[in-house]
Length: 368
Image (cartoon, rainbow, N blue to C red; front, side, top):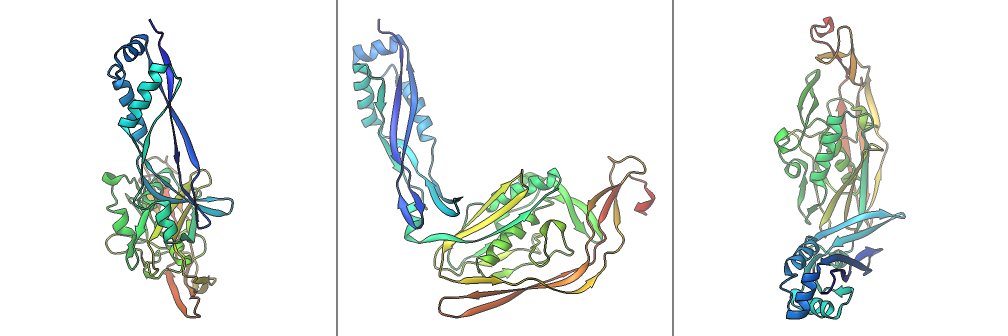
């Protein structure tokens, strides 16, 4: 009786990439292992049929076809952006069956599979035809954020990642992220309530809206709705470049005034505690200049407020939010188009003085 053996099912397919506006088609070489026992090998040779190994083949085919199409995404590499989409794979069963049968009967150790490519809706070639490229990026740091805040930043960033905004359409942060609650994956965290902090699901989501705002601002896209935080938040650095959201009253909205779809991508690294949002589309040659914030009407920070925390022992205290001076900030943006036209707009922010917040044990005199 013929001994059992292992054979390699192999396929080679192109995987297009967009590099500096040109489509390249490097090849991917892949393989999957098929293990046959002695009885299966003998039956294939005797009957000239794959019936005895079909179930094993189908499992391999299912693994191959688990790869589904994915629209183009851009990766930063070596100081430039590379566009990569993902084609889906479907096994041509009739052609592959002939190759498998012939190889098993001849005792071959390697069998070529026939693969049909399934292009994504927005492929590399589609992006190249529309001259899509990097338009601008925004970033922010969340150094020192508690675990709940990091979690909510990652959930919110994932909701905006991969969004496409068609020409003339408006990006709405609230519409894209959807309801913010424990049921939709967010954790409770601190939010501003009056003169202190309270706990609500989604605390920290404004890190995402702020970073999206910075990306759209630097890409020269028209900002149609933006709200400053009520006080300066230490995570966001220089004043005037933050964007708070609170559905349905406060949203972040901007319009795609270019001639092609705009892609929004988000990337975060927990180790460096940094969030980056980038936008890609067809450049019309506009140049963007953002001036330094002009600061007026400074006010000193008042005394802190206190909230109860049952995890603290008597006499203990833990700072949960930093104090900040009150002020007004104005940021001027100038967008210059190739024909010499200019569009100038300003981002105005008014921050009230904020004393910061400490957590103390329940019953602490400072809560009164």
